[in-house]
Amino acid sequence: MVRIKKNRKIGATSKEAMARAVRLTIEENHSLRQAGEICGIKFQTLARYVKKARNDPGGNIIMEPNYANRQVFSEDDEIMLAEYIITCSKMAYGLTTEGVKKLAYQFAAANNRKVPDSWKANKTAGSEWLRSFRKRRGNLSIRQPEQCSLSRLTSFNEFNVKQFYVNLKSILEKTDKLKDPSRIFNLDETSTTTVQRPRKVVAQKRGKTNQSLHKR
Image 1 (spheres, rainbow, N blue to C red):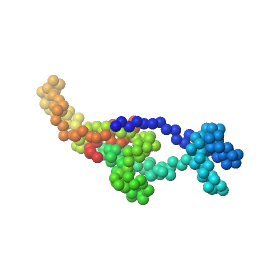
Image 2: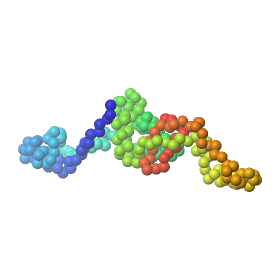
Image 3: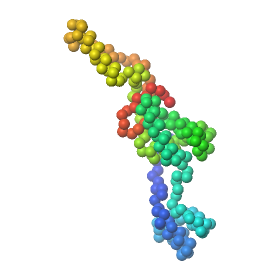
Image 4: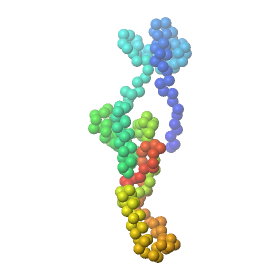
């Protein structure tokens, strides 16, 4: 079944407007609907804050939602996770979405973070967490890595490339027949490959397409 994304407006009410609506209800005896219409707030939402204010009259009630209290990781934790994921992709060991979710659970368990029961049962984070995590970070996307063998990845460096052209020049100078360009054939384009098609990985946005050696 295709997942239908619904646009939700969360946290659109300012704390000043909420505080005014609570005062209208408690101090000026307006009904929840009346105060909500004046301040542009749904009466169901206003009812929660009025209840908090009545139960704790002298308390310092926060008149805005605190979404961070339901997050598993802090801002610093998520920055560390994102940096680790990006580093893995740059080292040609990109993590798939399943790999990232397992990593998140292991990271939470190692640091004694409070996690949902579903995480404990499945030993992995949820798909909704991953979707929200990518949205919060903003620099992660799911990308298709290039197919690359280990030997090509490790051998393609400045020294080896220079050495290749030095050897090529030496062979061309020693063999008169190879001085004719028509005698040079390209035998690299074959239909047989030893490199498997990699799965999509989580990597940095707008960067070079990352290579992958392993399937996670």
